[in-house]
Figure 1 (cartoon, rainbow over the protein chains, first blue to last red):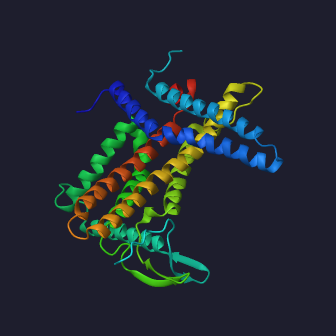
Figure 2 (figure 1 turned 30 degrees about the horizontal axis):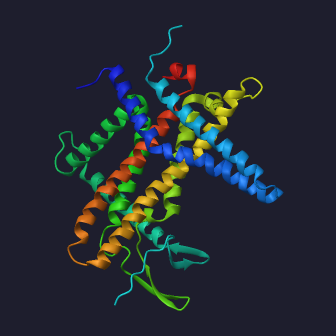
Figure 3 (figure 1 turned 90 degrees about the horizontal axis):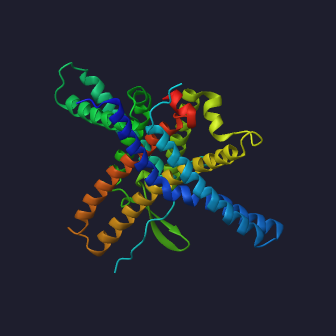
Length: 85
Length: 259
C-alpha cells in the first residue's frame, strides 16, 4: 500500500539519520586528520613544536562538532514542511 | 608443520604488460565484470515478457525490491529514478565481488615466487575489495556522482553555495562551507576503509580458521562472510544514496524551494 507523502518524508528522514549514524565516526576523525596532521607538518616545517599541534587540535575539535551539527541540521530540515510565503 | 602466511595488505602483481603491473584484483574485477555482462546478455536473449516467468521473475523481484527500498530512503520517486541506475550498479558489483571472493581458488591458487629468500604464494585471484585501491576507486565514483548530481539538480550557485560563502557577508556560513568541504573527504575515507576493513578482515578470519581446523569448522564463518558481503554491499549503496539525497537537497530556505 502506498504511504502518504508526509509518512514517506518521515521514513526518508529516518534513513538519513541511519546514514549519519554510520558515518559519524569518520566525520569526527577526518578533521582530526586534516587539522591535526596539518599542525604536525607545520610544526616540523617551521620548527615550532608544539604551537601548531595545539592549534590544529583545537581547530579539529571545533570542526568535528561543527560537521556533526551541520549534518544533523540537514536531516532535520528534510523532514520539515515547506514554509508558506 | 605448515607455516601460516597472512594475506598481504596490498594486492600483488601477477604479470606485467610492458611497464604496467597487472594485479590479482585487476583480474578479479575483469572476471566480475564478465559475469555481469554474461548475465545481462543472457537476460537480453530471453526477451522481455509481459507476464514474467522463471529468471525474469527473479530479476523483476530483485529490481522491484531494491527500487522500493531506495524509494523509501529517498522519499521522492522522481529522484529515486535518477539515482537508481548508479546505486544499483554499485550494489550488484560490490555484492558479486564479495561473494566471488569466497569461491574456492581465490587466494589459494597462485604462483610461487621468491621474495627476499622466502618462497611465497602470489594468488592469481583475490577478492576485489580486499584491496584498498579498489574501494577507494569506488568511493571516488560515489563522491563524484554526488557532486555531479548536486550541481545538475541545484545549479552552480545552489550547490557551490554550500561550500563557498563570502566570509565578509557571512563569516559563520563561510566556516560551515569549509566544514562541508572537509566532510566530503570524510565520505571518501568512510567509504573506502569501511568496505576494505570488513572484506580484508573476513579474508584473514577465514584463513586463520582454515589453518587451525581445515575441515567443517570454516563453514559457519563462510556463512557469516556471505552475510557480511551482502550487508557491506547494501551499506555502500545505501550511503551513496543518502549522500546523493543530501547533495541534492539545498541548505536552509533553499531546501524547501527545491523539495
